[in-house]
Image (cartoon, rainbow, N blue to C red; front, side, top):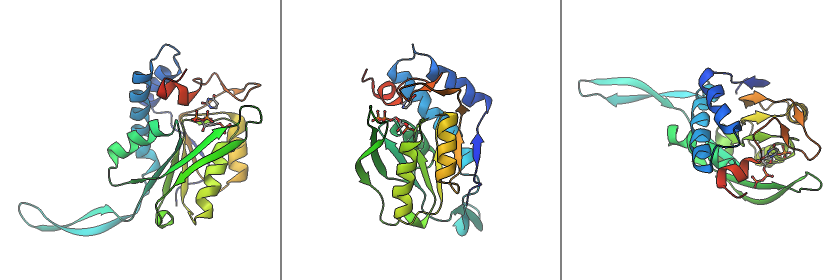
Length: 210
Ligand code: PRP
Ligand code: URA
Protein backbone atom coordinates (compact mmCIF):
# COMPACT_ATOMS: atom_id res chain seq x y z
CA UNK A 1 0.00 0.00 0.00
CA UNK A 2 1.34 3.46 -0.87
CA UNK A 3 2.04 6.05 1.81
CA UNK A 4 -1.12 8.00 2.55
CA UNK A 5 -1.06 11.78 2.79
CA UNK A 6 -0.26 14.50 0.29
CA UNK A 7 2.94 14.33 -1.72
CA UNK A 8 4.08 17.40 -3.65
CA UNK A 9 6.44 16.28 -6.41
CA UNK A 10 8.70 19.29 -6.75
CA UNK A 11 11.40 17.77 -8.94
CA UNK A 12 12.93 20.58 -11.04
CA UNK A 13 11.97 18.96 -14.35
CA UNK A 14 8.35 18.62 -13.25
CA UNK A 15 8.24 22.25 -12.11
CA UNK A 16 9.91 23.46 -15.33
CA UNK A 17 7.36 21.64 -17.46
CA UNK A 18 4.43 22.74 -15.30
CA UNK A 19 5.36 26.33 -16.15
CA UNK A 20 4.78 25.51 -19.86
CA UNK A 21 1.32 24.22 -18.99
CA UNK A 22 0.40 27.29 -16.94
CA UNK A 23 1.36 29.57 -19.85
CA UNK A 24 -1.85 30.62 -21.61
CA UNK A 25 0.08 30.81 -24.92
CA UNK A 26 0.97 27.09 -24.90
CA UNK A 27 -1.07 25.49 -27.73
CA UNK A 28 -2.96 22.18 -27.33
CA UNK A 29 -0.38 20.04 -29.16
CA UNK A 30 2.43 21.23 -26.87
CA UNK A 31 0.12 21.09 -23.85
CA UNK A 32 -0.67 17.41 -24.55
CA UNK A 33 2.98 16.49 -25.09
CA UNK A 34 4.22 18.23 -21.94
CA UNK A 35 1.35 16.88 -19.82
CA UNK A 36 2.26 13.34 -20.87
CA UNK A 37 5.94 14.01 -20.08
CA UNK A 38 5.11 15.24 -16.57
CA UNK A 39 2.87 12.25 -15.91
CA UNK A 40 5.77 10.01 -16.98
CA UNK A 41 8.09 11.75 -14.54
CA UNK A 42 5.53 11.49 -11.74
CA UNK A 43 5.06 7.76 -12.24
CA UNK A 44 8.51 7.01 -10.82
CA UNK A 45 7.45 8.37 -7.43
CA UNK A 46 3.96 6.87 -7.50
CA UNK A 47 5.15 3.39 -8.41
CA UNK A 48 8.22 3.06 -6.23
CA UNK A 49 6.63 0.56 -3.81
CA UNK A 50 4.90 -1.67 -6.38
CA UNK A 51 5.32 -5.36 -5.49
CA UNK A 52 7.76 -7.44 -7.52
CA UNK A 53 8.01 -11.20 -7.97
CA UNK A 54 10.99 -13.38 -8.85
CA UNK A 55 11.13 -14.99 -12.29
CA UNK A 56 13.66 -17.18 -14.07
CA UNK A 57 15.10 -15.68 -17.23
CA UNK A 58 17.52 -17.14 -19.75
CA UNK A 59 20.13 -14.50 -20.56
CA UNK A 60 22.39 -15.07 -23.58
CA UNK A 61 24.84 -16.67 -21.09
CA UNK A 62 22.88 -18.47 -18.35
CA UNK A 63 19.63 -18.78 -16.43
CA UNK A 64 19.20 -16.26 -13.63
CA UNK A 65 16.55 -15.06 -11.21
CA UNK A 66 15.28 -11.61 -11.98
CA UNK A 67 12.24 -9.57 -10.98
CA UNK A 68 9.15 -8.24 -12.65
CA UNK A 69 5.96 -6.51 -11.52
CA UNK A 70 4.02 -8.89 -9.30
CA UNK A 71 0.44 -8.13 -10.32
CA UNK A 72 -1.90 -6.03 -12.41
CA UNK A 73 -1.70 -2.25 -12.27
CA UNK A 74 -4.59 -0.18 -13.61
CA UNK A 75 -4.42 3.44 -14.72
CA UNK A 76 -7.79 5.20 -14.58
CA UNK A 77 -8.08 8.63 -16.18
CA UNK A 78 -11.04 10.80 -15.23
CA UNK A 79 -12.41 11.91 -18.61
CA UNK A 80 -11.64 14.07 -20.32
CA UNK A 81 -8.43 15.70 -19.18
CA UNK A 82 -7.09 12.64 -17.35
CA UNK A 83 -6.40 11.03 -20.74
CA UNK A 84 -3.55 13.49 -21.19
CA UNK A 85 -1.88 11.98 -18.13
CA UNK A 86 -2.71 8.30 -18.62
CA UNK A 87 -1.07 8.37 -22.06
CA UNK A 88 2.22 9.44 -20.48
CA UNK A 89 2.02 6.75 -17.80
CA UNK A 90 1.13 3.84 -20.07
CA UNK A 91 3.95 4.81 -22.41
CA UNK A 92 6.30 3.93 -19.54
CA UNK A 93 4.20 1.06 -18.16
CA UNK A 94 2.75 -0.59 -21.28
CA UNK A 95 1.66 -3.62 -19.21
CA UNK A 96 -0.75 -1.47 -17.17
CA UNK A 97 -4.43 -1.68 -18.08
CA UNK A 98 -6.52 1.45 -18.59
CA UNK A 99 -10.01 1.92 -17.17
CA UNK A 100 -12.10 5.03 -17.79
CA UNK A 101 -14.41 7.07 -15.58
CA UNK A 102 -16.31 9.87 -17.31
CA UNK A 103 -17.29 12.80 -15.09
CA UNK A 104 -18.08 16.43 -15.75
CA UNK A 105 -18.81 19.22 -13.31
CA UNK A 106 -22.24 20.77 -13.43
CA UNK A 107 -21.26 24.40 -14.04
CA UNK A 108 -23.89 25.78 -11.65
CA UNK A 109 -23.60 23.40 -8.70
CA UNK A 110 -19.97 22.25 -9.33
CA UNK A 111 -21.22 18.74 -8.48
CA UNK A 112 -19.73 15.87 -10.55
CA UNK A 113 -22.01 14.07 -12.99
CA UNK A 114 -20.96 10.55 -14.02
CA UNK A 115 -21.61 9.63 -17.68
CA UNK A 116 -19.29 6.69 -18.32
CA UNK A 117 -17.50 3.93 -16.42
CA UNK A 118 -15.54 1.04 -17.93
CA UNK A 119 -13.09 -0.77 -15.67
CA UNK A 120 -11.34 -4.17 -15.74
CA UNK A 121 -13.39 -6.82 -13.85
CA UNK A 122 -10.38 -7.66 -11.65
CA UNK A 123 -9.36 -4.05 -11.00
CA UNK A 124 -9.37 -4.70 -7.23
CA UNK A 125 -6.51 -7.20 -7.60
CA UNK A 126 -3.86 -4.48 -7.82
CA UNK A 127 -3.11 -0.80 -7.33
CA UNK A 128 -5.07 1.83 -9.23
CA UNK A 129 -3.50 5.09 -10.39
CA UNK A 130 -6.44 7.51 -10.66
CA UNK A 131 -5.32 10.48 -12.76
CA UNK A 132 -6.78 13.93 -13.45
CA UNK A 133 -4.72 17.10 -13.90
CA UNK A 134 -6.99 19.23 -11.69
CA UNK A 135 -8.14 18.81 -8.08
CA UNK A 136 -10.42 21.83 -7.61
CA UNK A 137 -13.38 21.35 -5.22
CA UNK A 138 -12.43 17.67 -4.99
CA UNK A 139 -15.90 16.52 -6.02
CA UNK A 140 -14.80 14.66 -9.16
CA UNK A 141 -11.88 12.89 -7.48
CA UNK A 142 -14.03 11.84 -4.50
CA UNK A 143 -16.79 10.50 -6.78
CA UNK A 144 -14.25 8.54 -8.84
CA UNK A 145 -12.59 7.11 -5.71
CA UNK A 146 -15.99 6.05 -4.35
CA UNK A 147 -16.75 4.29 -7.66
CA UNK A 148 -13.45 2.42 -7.39
CA UNK A 149 -13.91 1.54 -3.72
CA UNK A 150 -17.41 0.21 -4.47
CA UNK A 151 -15.66 -2.26 -6.79
CA UNK A 152 -13.38 -3.38 -3.96
CA UNK A 153 -10.28 -1.32 -4.79
CA UNK A 154 -8.26 -0.86 -1.60
CA UNK A 155 -5.09 0.64 -3.12
CA UNK A 156 -6.11 3.81 -4.98
CA UNK A 157 -3.50 6.53 -5.59
CA UNK A 158 -4.77 9.89 -6.82
CA UNK A 159 -2.40 11.71 -9.17
CA UNK A 160 -2.96 15.28 -10.31
CA UNK A 161 -0.92 18.22 -11.53
CA UNK A 162 -2.44 21.19 -9.76
CA UNK A 163 -4.47 21.04 -6.56
CA UNK A 164 -6.33 23.72 -4.66
CA UNK A 165 -5.98 23.87 -0.87
CA UNK A 166 -9.77 23.41 -0.65
CA UNK A 167 -9.64 20.27 -2.81
CA UNK A 168 -6.80 18.77 -0.81
CA UNK A 169 -8.75 19.22 2.44
CA UNK A 170 -11.96 17.80 0.94
CA UNK A 171 -10.22 14.78 -0.55
CA UNK A 172 -8.07 13.91 2.45
CA UNK A 173 -11.09 14.23 4.77
CA UNK A 174 -13.35 12.08 2.57
CA UNK A 175 -10.73 9.49 1.57
CA UNK A 176 -8.08 9.46 4.29
CA UNK A 177 -6.48 6.25 3.02
CA UNK A 178 -5.91 7.54 -0.53
CA UNK A 179 -2.50 9.15 -1.11
CA UNK A 180 -2.52 12.31 -3.21
CA UNK A 181 0.37 13.09 -5.55
CA UNK A 182 0.49 16.56 -7.08
CA UNK A 183 3.03 18.82 -8.75
CA UNK A 184 1.66 21.93 -7.03
CA UNK A 185 -0.81 23.16 -4.45
CA UNK A 186 -2.01 26.53 -5.69
CA UNK A 187 -3.42 29.52 -3.80
CA UNK A 188 -7.20 29.14 -3.89
CA UNK A 189 -10.38 28.47 -5.83
CA UNK A 190 -12.17 31.40 -7.42
CA UNK A 191 -15.92 32.03 -7.13
CA UNK A 192 -16.71 29.70 -10.03
CA UNK A 193 -14.53 26.82 -8.85
CA UNK A 194 -11.39 27.44 -10.93
CA UNK A 195 -7.95 27.09 -9.40
CA UNK A 196 -5.86 30.27 -9.03
CA UNK A 197 -3.33 30.72 -10.54
CA UNK A 198 -3.94 27.25 -12.06
CA UNK A 199 -3.77 26.58 -15.77
CA UNK A 200 -7.35 27.15 -16.87
CA UNK A 201 -9.76 24.45 -18.05
CA UNK A 202 -7.55 21.39 -18.43
CA UNK A 203 -9.95 19.50 -20.72
CA UNK A 204 -10.26 22.45 -23.08
CA UNK A 205 -6.49 22.92 -23.13
CA UNK A 206 -5.78 19.24 -23.84
CA UNK A 207 -8.39 18.96 -26.58
CA UNK A 208 -8.43 22.53 -27.97
CA UNK A 209 -12.15 22.95 -27.36
CA UNK A 210 -12.16 26.61 -26.43
C1 PRP B 1 -12.23 19.21 -14.69
C2 PRP B 1 -11.00 18.43 -14.27
C3 PRP B 1 -11.53 17.59 -13.15
C4 PRP B 1 -12.57 18.49 -12.50
C5 PRP B 1 -12.00 19.05 -11.23
O1 PRP B 1 -13.04 18.43 -15.47
O2 PRP B 1 -10.42 17.70 -15.31
O3 PRP B 1 -12.13 16.38 -13.57
O4 PRP B 1 -12.82 19.55 -13.43
O5 PRP B 1 -12.96 19.81 -10.55
P1 PRP B 1 -13.52 19.40 -9.12
O6 PRP B 1 -12.36 19.02 -8.29
O7 PRP B 1 -14.19 20.66 -8.65
O8 PRP B 1 -14.50 18.28 -9.29
P2 PRP B 1 -14.42 19.02 -16.10
O9 PRP B 1 -15.54 18.83 -15.13
O10 PRP B 1 -14.18 20.42 -16.59
O11 PRP B 1 -14.72 18.04 -17.29
P3 PRP B 1 -13.95 17.84 -18.68
O12 PRP B 1 -12.62 17.20 -18.37
O13 PRP B 1 -14.83 16.94 -19.44
O14 PRP B 1 -13.76 19.18 -19.33
N1 URA C 1 -11.25 22.16 -13.69
C1 URA C 1 -10.28 22.67 -14.50
O1 URA C 1 -10.07 22.15 -15.61
N2 URA C 1 -9.58 23.72 -14.08
C2 URA C 1 -9.78 24.30 -12.89
O2 URA C 1 -9.08 25.28 -12.55
C3 URA C 1 -10.79 23.78 -12.07
C4 URA C 1 -11.50 22.69 -12.48
